Each structure stands twice: as C-alpha cells, then as structure tokens.
Image (tube, rainbow, N blue to C red):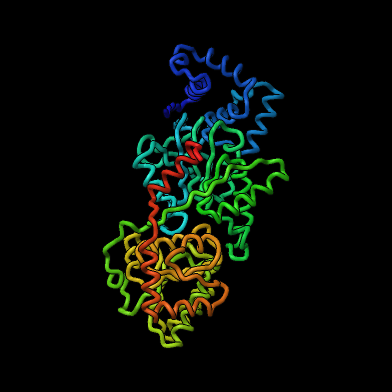
Length: 464
C-alpha cells in the first residue's frame, strides 16, 4: 500500500521525517516541535545511510548527490546529528512542497516525456507506461531543471518534489545526463529503495565506432550508476548477454552488480494497425515501397542500404526507398548521399517524427522492410514489420536473428551485395516473398500487455 506525506515549511519537514522514520503519523501529531527534533536527532545519531539520504532529500528539496551523502556522513560523525539542523531547501525550491512516497512504484520517463520521437527506446517506454497506467498503481516522474529533484507528471500535486522511500524506482529509458546519474547513483547505493532499469543494449561498448561523440564516456557513467541497481530487465537474450558480461567485470572492483534477466519485447507492436493510406498521407508514388525504419546513425547502416538500393536500381528493379527516423547523429554522409541519389532521379524520401498511425500504415504498404543494422538490443522494426505480414531483410546475428525468425531474410550487414541480392530477390520473386509473408503470419504473438506484465513481475515484484 502506498502512503504519501507532504510538507512545505522547515518545521513541517522535520515532522514529515519523524512520521516516515517512526512510521506513525498519528503519534507525530501529538508531539510539539521540540520533542520531534529531539527524537529525530537521537534517531539520526545512529542513522544508517538510508535515513541520512532521506533527511538530506526532504530537508533540501533535492535528491542528494553521491559525494554529498558521504560528506554529510563524515560531518555527522564529527559534529553529531545536530549538524543536520542547518539543512534548508535551496532558495529556488523553498516554496515547493516535498512529498515522500512510501511503498510506491515510481517510473522515470523524463526524456521520453519531453520528446515527440516515437522509435526505439521512446516506443518501449511509452508502451510500458500505457500498459502500467491502465492496470497498475504507478507514479510517472520526471526531473526538474538541473536534475536536482524528481517531480510527478500530471495529476495530483504535479509541482511537488517527490522523494521515494521503501519504494521501487524504475528507470524506463536510457539516462546519460551527469547530474541525473550522480543523484541516481546515491539513490541506488544509499536509499531504502529498490532500483531497477530496462536494459536496452550496450552499443557504446560493443560497437563504439558507431556511437555518437561523447557517448562512450556518458554510457560508462550510466553503467557506473546501474552497477548499484538491484535489477536490470534486458530487452532480449542478446542484450542480456552484453549486460552479464559487463557485470562479471564488476567483481574486480568488489561490486556485486544487479540481477539481470532477459524480458523480451512485444512481438505484435502493430496489432491495432492504422487504416491510413500511406501513399496519399505522405505523398508517395505508386511504385513498390522499400521501407527503412530507424535513426540515421552509423549503427543503423543506412549508407549500406543506399548502396544496395542503387545496385538494385541499376539492375532495373523499380521501387521507392522510404526512410523513417529521427534523433540522428553523425548522419552528414547519409544525408549527402541521399541528396546525390535524389538529384540523379532516384525515388528516395526521408521522413522524421511520423505518428504511430503513419508508421503503421507504411509497414502495411511496404513490399519489404530493410533493417541491416550492425548491432541492436532488440530491433523493433523487425517485429513491427513482421507483425503485419511484411517481410524483412535484416542482419544474420544477435537479437535480429532471434526476433526475425521466422519471416525474415537474413544477410551479412557488412556485405552490401548480400543486402542487394536479398532486396532484388524479394522484389522480383513473388513466390519467395509469399513464403516469407506466410511465415510471418504464422508467428506466435507477444503483446505489449504480455511484456509489461512480465516486466512488472520481475522489476517490481522480483518474481523470476
């Protein structure tokens, strides 16, 4: 059962701490301020790190950083717990109430709540939130400016600063912001909360040459934080292999690391598919559509897609190449090559920030989806396309091999001719394409409800 206790003034914050630590709001109300302070000082004099972390969070309106908890632990040891009486909220946040959530589930979707991107991590996060909000009691939270504190998104007291206590915190997206990670590190190591994360992939470690500039260092900082978490739900068996390999290295630093389990994503992403006419909606021609979904970053291998398409065009195969994606980095060469081919008369279009309905319509309209990525934690476009019976050309290893079987044509993503041959065959051999369609239609579905239930059982209820 979730309990919520709110306070604003300094004296009421001390009372809030007393009620939480002694688990008796009724008793706290019978005490005067002096009695409350006296027994809190006594309690904090022998406090464990979790109680100190809570006191810092409540009294300052900020989740403490890792170094702040250690510094205050040393100060209390030298000066006594009365030193904590100097704690006050920062002037910027002094007018805001603080709410301690006891025994709740807090889901951090900060970045997802601030972007309209709808692929990859954002799609997973939004799908999970949609399912959990329908059937579970959860608080969706984001970070205030500067990543100092959590606040609720929408609904009750949404401007309060939220502090979890004996709760479950779930990081439902990737975080690489240094200030955010520093406070999450302290929350995971010192607080009395269970901390969990969805593990998407370890691309910046596995294929760092494809990552954005600065991402390798940022991802290493993320791993240093989740090393203190309790559980990581990897999105595929392949992603779980990566995270378990990383966890084995932690033993050299005396760190146990989190429990790691594969919780595979949904296989019927587009079960409720749109009836939009993709061609009229996006001003596409009547030529067969070859669809490529994903951000135009190097890992997605879109330069190889363009080269394979050109090889197919030169063999006289007629089709239009449609890219859907956004949030790209290191994409200058891709954009330049697209412009060159368009100038040469090739039918290529590039669409960003399409709605779910538009993407669904494109999957249905396409002859084939091209997804020869160099590395994926899961590869949502593979299952999205196959879920509506559209064949896929994808990579012959890792999560893509697992999620594409049956219904996909597998290629070596580092061999442009392998991609081109598979593309030409699907576009010109109708019997071959129909075999792939039938295989896709025979796949066993796995819904977002299935995924979200299994995720909840593992990260919240700790059931294997």
